[in-house]
Length: 407
Ligand code: HEM
Image 1 (cartoon, rainbow, N blue to C red):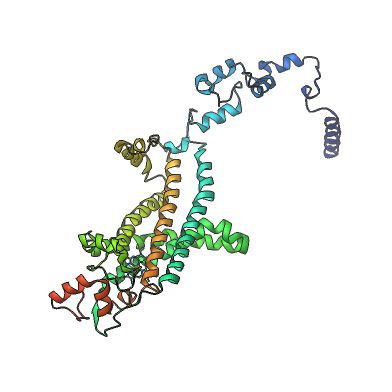
Image 2 (cartoon, rainbow, N blue to C red):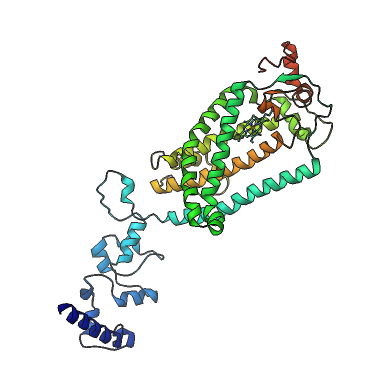
């Protein structure tokens, strides 16, 4: 019974409310006592309708109530700041600009940041230019490689295969290479799925398909990062001495490595200048992508950008390019957002370099893949692409010694 009466009262109240205007001001009515109700006392010191209207007219509004409530009116009266009395919007504004005196029950300073609006910038950049230009970079690289293949064709062993094999990479070198290569390929694919899934997979295959794929990709990405880093260390230790720049590299570069003209074979030791570029790109970009990746795997534990920006500012680089100094104070959240963007951008750059590398190691050059497959290469191939290395082996009496690891 009580329920029926309550329901009837609710319906009647609702009908009356529907008949009444939303507020007296809407109709320009002056109800008895309306003046008093519009006063600041009626709002408990919060902003009034007059304040809001004054702000919309850009006419300014009294700040006394806000001053009383917040005590820092100075920070809030700039042209872009809210001009109303003490209000929710001001509280949100103070939270947003980090000026609110927030008390949290954890020991982490980051938890006191309740609003961090550069998150929107991060989201927009990640969903916009990062995907767009990253995608263009990869597609552009594939396009250029296809064009190069159409124009130049496969780089052949011009003197023909000799039938004599020499050992180029021992088992440990090939293990280091394939550990790095295999894990990088997995990281690249799962990274691309994570970044492009929402726009490239969900519209075609739906959420049910993407959900396990995204969870699996994240798992693979987080765990395969470790063998990748191990591989990086291995190839660095094994090959760094062979990749120190030398005077032959300049000649090699000036002649385009002989890649663009048939019959040209600039001198090279174990690694030519092109390979040295690949090596250092893999090491430097790989170290950078690993560092930013670690800071993502261990959130808030490895902030790097504020310090790096401080170092760059000290070098005077922004000033040199006529730019403002980089921010040296960053919220923990901004550090994470920068890590995420940097990680993806460096990842894209590395993928582009590696696409070129995979091309030349497979269809682009006859006889190259053998070096990383069985470990030995045809002597004529080695003479054409690494003549100084062959001379070194000959001087050591190791020519044709396929069973002896070549250094
Ligand atoms: C299917 C993928 C790949 C293939 C077929 C491949 C093939 C090769 C071959 C044949 C060589 C030896 C070249 C020579 O004898 O002079 C080589 C070297 C090398 N690879 Fe790979 N590779 C692949 C992926 C990768 C990846 C993903 C990385 C690193 C992230 C990488 C890093 C290197 C480095 C640093 C070298 C030594 C420098 C150079 O030769 O450019 N490779 N690779």
